[in-house]
Length: 330
Image 1 (tube, helix red, strand yellow):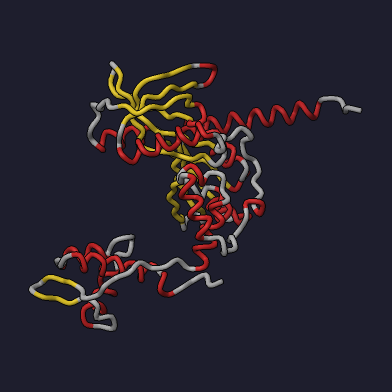
Image 2 (cartoon, rainbow, N blue to C red):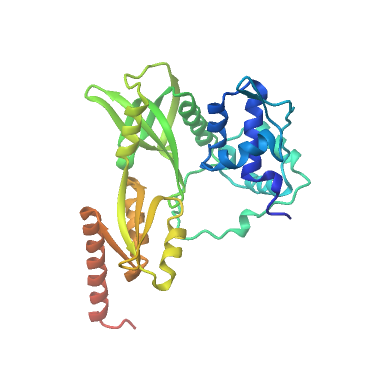
Protein backbone atom coordinates (compact mmCIF):
# COMPACT_ATOMS: atom_id res chain seq x y z
CA UNK A 1 0.00 0.00 0.00
CA UNK A 2 1.46 3.33 -1.09
CA UNK A 3 1.70 5.86 1.76
CA UNK A 4 2.58 8.83 -0.45
CA UNK A 5 1.25 9.76 -3.86
CA UNK A 6 2.48 12.75 -5.86
CA UNK A 7 -0.95 13.63 -7.19
CA UNK A 8 -2.51 13.57 -3.72
CA UNK A 9 0.07 15.88 -2.15
CA UNK A 10 -0.72 19.24 -0.58
CA UNK A 11 0.67 21.20 -3.55
CA UNK A 12 -1.44 19.18 -5.98
CA UNK A 13 -4.58 20.00 -4.00
CA UNK A 14 -3.58 23.66 -3.78
CA UNK A 15 -3.20 23.92 -7.58
CA UNK A 16 -6.50 22.11 -7.99
CA UNK A 17 -8.17 24.65 -5.71
CA UNK A 18 -6.77 27.54 -7.80
CA UNK A 19 -7.92 25.95 -11.07
CA UNK A 20 -11.37 25.25 -9.66
CA UNK A 21 -11.87 28.90 -8.70
CA UNK A 22 -10.45 30.14 -12.01
CA UNK A 23 -12.84 27.87 -13.90
CA UNK A 24 -15.84 29.47 -12.17
CA UNK A 25 -14.92 33.05 -13.10
CA UNK A 26 -11.80 35.05 -14.05
CA UNK A 27 -9.70 35.96 -11.01
CA UNK A 28 -7.68 39.05 -10.25
CA UNK A 29 -4.00 38.79 -9.45
CA UNK A 30 -4.79 39.40 -5.77
CA UNK A 31 -7.42 36.64 -5.73
CA UNK A 32 -5.04 34.13 -7.29
CA UNK A 33 -2.22 35.00 -4.93
CA UNK A 34 -4.50 34.71 -1.94
CA UNK A 35 -5.61 31.22 -2.98
CA UNK A 36 -2.05 30.04 -3.60
CA UNK A 37 -0.80 31.41 -0.29
CA UNK A 38 -3.57 29.75 1.68
CA UNK A 39 -3.21 26.75 3.99
CA UNK A 40 0.09 27.93 5.51
CA UNK A 41 1.95 27.81 2.18
CA UNK A 42 3.10 31.42 2.06
CA UNK A 43 5.89 30.63 -0.40
CA UNK A 44 3.54 28.88 -2.84
CA UNK A 45 2.84 32.05 -4.83
CA UNK A 46 6.48 32.50 -5.80
CA UNK A 47 6.95 28.84 -6.67
CA UNK A 48 3.68 27.80 -8.30
CA UNK A 49 2.32 30.91 -10.05
CA UNK A 50 5.15 31.24 -12.64
CA UNK A 51 4.76 27.56 -13.51
CA UNK A 52 1.02 27.94 -14.02
CA UNK A 53 1.35 31.01 -16.25
CA UNK A 54 4.31 30.26 -18.52
CA UNK A 55 6.28 27.39 -16.99
CA UNK A 56 5.98 23.64 -16.81
CA UNK A 57 2.24 23.73 -16.00
CA UNK A 58 0.64 26.31 -18.37
CA UNK A 59 -2.88 25.73 -17.01
CA UNK A 60 -3.83 29.37 -16.36
CA UNK A 61 -3.99 32.11 -18.97
CA UNK A 62 -4.01 35.87 -18.49
CA UNK A 63 -6.25 38.25 -20.42
CA UNK A 64 -6.82 41.91 -19.52
CA UNK A 65 -5.14 41.32 -16.16
CA UNK A 66 -7.65 38.59 -15.30
CA UNK A 67 -6.77 34.92 -14.88
CA UNK A 68 -8.86 31.99 -16.11
CA UNK A 69 -8.35 28.36 -17.12
CA UNK A 70 -9.59 26.25 -20.03
CA UNK A 71 -9.41 23.13 -17.84
CA UNK A 72 -12.49 21.10 -17.00
CA UNK A 73 -11.94 19.63 -13.54
CA UNK A 74 -13.29 16.40 -12.07
CA UNK A 75 -13.28 15.17 -8.50
CA UNK A 76 -10.22 13.17 -7.41
CA UNK A 77 -10.99 9.57 -6.49
CA UNK A 78 -9.99 8.11 -3.15
CA UNK A 79 -6.76 6.17 -2.85
CA UNK A 80 -6.64 2.62 -1.51
CA UNK A 81 -5.13 3.97 1.70
CA UNK A 82 -7.93 6.49 2.16
CA UNK A 83 -10.58 3.83 1.53
CA UNK A 84 -8.94 1.51 4.06
CA UNK A 85 -8.89 4.32 6.60
CA UNK A 86 -12.59 5.04 6.01
CA UNK A 87 -13.37 1.35 6.46
CA UNK A 88 -11.62 1.49 9.84
CA UNK A 89 -13.66 4.53 10.87
CA UNK A 90 -16.87 2.59 10.19
CA UNK A 91 -15.93 0.34 13.11
CA UNK A 92 -15.65 3.25 15.55
CA UNK A 93 -18.67 3.38 17.87
CA UNK A 94 -18.69 7.20 17.66
CA UNK A 95 -19.10 7.11 13.88
CA UNK A 96 -22.89 6.77 14.07
CA UNK A 97 -23.11 10.12 15.86
CA UNK A 98 -22.28 11.99 12.66
CA UNK A 99 -24.07 9.78 10.08
CA UNK A 100 -27.53 8.26 9.94
CA UNK A 101 -28.25 4.58 9.30
CA UNK A 102 -28.86 5.07 5.57
CA UNK A 103 -25.51 6.84 5.08
CA UNK A 104 -23.64 4.21 7.11
CA UNK A 105 -25.23 1.39 5.09
CA UNK A 106 -24.28 3.11 1.82
CA UNK A 107 -20.67 3.55 2.99
CA UNK A 108 -20.46 -0.02 4.21
CA UNK A 109 -21.70 -1.27 0.84
CA UNK A 110 -19.29 0.95 -1.12
CA UNK A 111 -16.36 -0.30 0.99
CA UNK A 112 -17.40 -3.95 1.19
CA UNK A 113 -14.36 -5.11 -0.81
CA UNK A 114 -11.86 -3.04 1.20
CA UNK A 115 -9.69 -4.31 4.03
CA UNK A 116 -9.66 -1.91 7.02
CA UNK A 117 -6.41 -0.16 7.78
CA UNK A 118 -6.82 -1.25 11.40
CA UNK A 119 -9.51 -2.76 13.60
CA UNK A 120 -10.80 -1.44 16.90
CA UNK A 121 -9.54 -4.65 18.52
CA UNK A 122 -5.99 -3.62 17.51
CA UNK A 123 -6.17 -0.64 19.87
CA UNK A 124 -5.49 -1.01 23.58
CA UNK A 125 -6.76 1.99 25.53
CA UNK A 126 -5.77 2.37 29.17
CA UNK A 127 -6.09 4.99 31.91
CA UNK A 128 -9.50 6.08 30.63
CA UNK A 129 -12.75 6.64 32.48
CA UNK A 130 -15.03 3.62 32.66
CA UNK A 131 -18.22 5.70 32.60
CA UNK A 132 -17.91 7.17 29.10
CA UNK A 133 -20.92 8.26 27.07
CA UNK A 134 -23.29 5.58 25.77
CA UNK A 135 -22.90 6.06 22.01
CA UNK A 136 -25.20 3.12 21.27
CA UNK A 137 -28.17 4.88 22.88
CA UNK A 138 -30.70 6.15 20.36
CA UNK A 139 -31.61 9.03 22.70
CA UNK A 140 -27.97 10.05 23.03
CA UNK A 141 -27.43 9.98 19.25
CA UNK A 142 -30.57 12.07 18.71
CA UNK A 143 -29.46 14.64 21.30
CA UNK A 144 -25.97 14.76 19.81
CA UNK A 145 -27.29 15.48 16.32
CA UNK A 146 -29.53 18.23 17.67
CA UNK A 147 -26.51 19.92 19.26
CA UNK A 148 -24.42 19.35 16.14
CA UNK A 149 -27.08 20.91 13.90
CA UNK A 150 -27.53 23.87 16.26
CA UNK A 151 -23.78 24.44 16.29
CA UNK A 152 -23.57 24.44 12.50
CA UNK A 153 -26.71 26.51 11.91
CA UNK A 154 -26.19 28.87 14.89
CA UNK A 155 -29.66 28.16 16.25
CA UNK A 156 -30.94 27.71 19.81
CA UNK A 157 -32.18 24.66 21.70
CA UNK A 158 -34.46 24.20 24.69
CA UNK A 159 -32.46 21.83 26.88
CA UNK A 160 -33.27 19.93 30.06
CA UNK A 161 -30.07 18.95 31.85
CA UNK A 162 -29.25 16.99 34.99
CA UNK A 163 -25.90 17.98 36.44
CA UNK A 164 -23.90 16.55 39.29
CA UNK A 165 -25.59 15.84 42.63
CA UNK A 166 -29.02 15.92 40.99
CA UNK A 167 -28.86 19.60 40.09
CA UNK A 168 -31.29 20.26 37.23
CA UNK A 169 -31.15 23.05 34.67
CA UNK A 170 -33.59 23.81 31.87
CA UNK A 171 -33.85 26.65 29.40
CA UNK A 172 -32.77 27.97 26.02
CA UNK A 173 -29.09 27.48 25.13
CA UNK A 174 -27.03 28.51 22.09
CA UNK A 175 -24.40 25.79 21.40
CA UNK A 176 -21.38 27.07 19.48
CA UNK A 177 -18.84 24.24 19.80
CA UNK A 178 -18.65 20.50 20.52
CA UNK A 179 -15.63 19.08 22.34
CA UNK A 180 -14.48 15.51 22.94
CA UNK A 181 -12.54 14.46 26.04
CA UNK A 182 -10.36 11.46 25.25
CA UNK A 183 -9.62 10.93 28.93
CA UNK A 184 -13.30 10.88 29.99
CA UNK A 185 -14.61 9.46 26.68
CA UNK A 186 -17.35 12.10 26.70
CA UNK A 187 -18.63 14.83 24.42
CA UNK A 188 -19.26 18.29 25.79
CA UNK A 189 -21.18 21.22 24.30
CA UNK A 190 -19.91 24.74 24.84
CA UNK A 191 -22.97 26.98 25.03
CA UNK A 192 -24.09 30.38 26.17
CA UNK A 193 -27.41 31.41 27.66
CA UNK A 194 -29.15 34.74 28.11
CA UNK A 195 -30.10 35.54 31.71
CA UNK A 196 -31.41 38.58 33.56
CA UNK A 197 -27.79 39.33 34.49
CA UNK A 198 -26.51 39.04 30.92
CA UNK A 199 -25.18 36.17 28.83
CA UNK A 200 -23.45 33.34 30.70
CA UNK A 201 -21.22 30.51 29.52
CA UNK A 202 -22.04 26.83 30.08
CA UNK A 203 -20.35 23.53 29.29
CA UNK A 204 -22.86 20.67 29.13
CA UNK A 205 -21.93 16.99 29.22
CA UNK A 206 -24.10 15.47 26.48
CA UNK A 207 -24.52 12.29 28.48
CA UNK A 208 -26.40 14.27 31.15
CA UNK A 209 -28.82 15.93 28.73
CA UNK A 210 -32.28 14.46 29.33
CA UNK A 211 -34.28 16.35 26.69
CA UNK A 212 -33.61 18.55 23.63
CA UNK A 213 -36.09 20.50 21.51
CA UNK A 214 -35.68 23.15 18.84
CA UNK A 215 -36.20 26.74 19.91
CA UNK A 216 -37.00 29.79 17.81
CA UNK A 217 -35.77 32.20 20.43
CA UNK A 218 -33.21 34.76 19.31
CA UNK A 219 -30.14 35.68 21.27
CA UNK A 220 -29.12 39.16 22.35
CA UNK A 221 -25.49 38.09 21.84
CA UNK A 222 -24.91 38.65 18.12
CA UNK A 223 -21.24 39.35 17.49
CA UNK A 224 -18.71 36.53 16.88
CA UNK A 225 -16.27 38.48 19.08
CA UNK A 226 -18.59 38.18 22.08
CA UNK A 227 -18.95 34.43 21.52
CA UNK A 228 -15.18 34.03 21.24
CA UNK A 229 -14.86 35.71 24.64
CA UNK A 230 -16.91 32.88 26.13
CA UNK A 231 -14.62 30.38 24.44
CA UNK A 232 -11.51 32.07 25.78
CA UNK A 233 -12.95 32.07 29.30
CA UNK A 234 -12.92 28.25 29.26
CA UNK A 235 -9.21 27.98 28.58
CA UNK A 236 -6.10 28.33 30.72
CA UNK A 237 -2.38 28.09 30.09
CA UNK A 238 0.49 26.47 31.94
CA UNK A 239 4.17 27.19 31.26
CA UNK A 240 6.62 24.33 31.69
CA UNK A 241 10.35 23.89 31.20
CA UNK A 242 11.46 20.62 29.61
CA UNK A 243 14.95 19.20 30.02
CA UNK A 244 16.78 17.15 27.38
CA UNK A 245 17.07 14.13 29.69
CA UNK A 246 15.27 10.82 29.11
CA UNK A 247 13.96 11.96 25.74
CA UNK A 248 11.58 14.23 27.67
CA UNK A 249 10.79 16.61 24.81
CA UNK A 250 9.61 13.91 22.41
CA UNK A 251 7.60 12.17 25.12
CA UNK A 252 6.02 15.47 26.15
CA UNK A 253 5.03 16.35 22.58
CA UNK A 254 3.38 12.96 22.17
CA UNK A 255 1.72 13.12 25.60
CA UNK A 256 0.20 16.54 24.93
CA UNK A 257 -0.30 16.09 21.17
CA UNK A 258 -4.01 17.02 21.24
CA UNK A 259 -3.42 20.23 23.21
CA UNK A 260 -2.63 23.58 21.61
CA UNK A 261 0.92 24.53 22.56
CA UNK A 262 3.94 26.71 21.74
CA UNK A 263 7.50 25.47 22.27
CA UNK A 264 10.79 27.39 22.15
CA UNK A 265 14.39 26.34 22.73
CA UNK A 266 16.56 28.35 25.13
CA UNK A 267 20.23 28.09 24.15
CA UNK A 268 21.43 29.54 27.47
CA UNK A 269 19.72 26.93 29.63
CA UNK A 270 19.74 24.16 27.00
CA UNK A 271 16.08 23.54 27.82
CA UNK A 272 12.72 23.93 26.11
CA UNK A 273 9.95 26.24 27.28
CA UNK A 274 6.44 25.08 26.38
CA UNK A 275 3.13 26.88 26.87
CA UNK A 276 0.20 24.42 26.94
CA UNK A 277 -3.35 25.70 26.43
CA UNK A 278 -6.09 23.52 27.90
CA UNK A 279 -9.76 23.55 28.83
CA UNK A 280 -10.28 24.37 32.51
CA UNK A 281 -12.31 21.15 32.87
CA UNK A 282 -9.17 19.17 31.98
CA UNK A 283 -6.91 20.82 34.55
CA UNK A 284 -6.75 17.80 36.86
CA UNK A 285 -5.70 15.61 33.94
CA UNK A 286 -3.01 18.11 32.86
CA UNK A 287 -1.63 18.21 36.43
CA UNK A 288 -1.43 14.41 36.58
CA UNK A 289 0.28 14.18 33.20
CA UNK A 290 2.90 16.78 34.11
CA UNK A 291 3.64 15.04 37.41
CA UNK A 292 4.21 11.77 35.54
CA UNK A 293 7.36 13.27 33.94
CA UNK A 294 9.07 13.71 37.31
CA UNK A 295 12.13 16.00 37.42
CA UNK A 296 12.42 16.29 33.62
CA UNK A 297 9.64 18.93 33.64
CA UNK A 298 9.49 22.03 35.83
CA UNK A 299 6.36 24.19 36.12
CA UNK A 300 7.11 27.90 35.68
CA UNK A 301 3.60 29.25 36.09
CA UNK A 302 0.97 30.36 36.67
CA UNK A 303 1.18 30.48 40.45
CA UNK A 304 -2.17 28.77 41.05
CA UNK A 305 -1.17 25.81 38.87
CA UNK A 306 2.19 25.59 40.65
CA UNK A 307 0.42 25.53 44.02
CA UNK A 308 -1.73 22.63 42.81
CA UNK A 309 1.40 20.73 41.75
CA UNK A 310 3.06 21.35 45.13
CA UNK A 311 -0.05 20.27 47.03
CA UNK A 312 -0.27 16.99 45.13
CA UNK A 313 3.44 16.27 45.65
CA UNK A 314 3.04 17.02 49.37
CA UNK A 315 0.09 14.63 49.70
CA UNK A 316 1.99 11.94 47.82
CA UNK A 317 4.96 12.35 50.19
CA UNK A 318 2.66 12.07 53.20
CA UNK A 319 1.12 8.87 51.84
CA UNK A 320 4.59 7.48 51.19
CA UNK A 321 5.72 8.25 54.76
CA UNK A 322 2.58 6.67 56.20
CA UNK A 323 3.16 3.48 54.24
CA UNK A 324 6.69 3.28 55.64
CA UNK A 325 5.65 3.51 59.31
CA UNK A 326 2.68 1.13 59.04
CA UNK A 327 3.42 -2.41 60.29
CA UNK A 328 3.86 -5.10 57.69
CA UNK A 329 0.64 -6.84 56.87
CA UNK A 330 0.59 -10.64 57.00
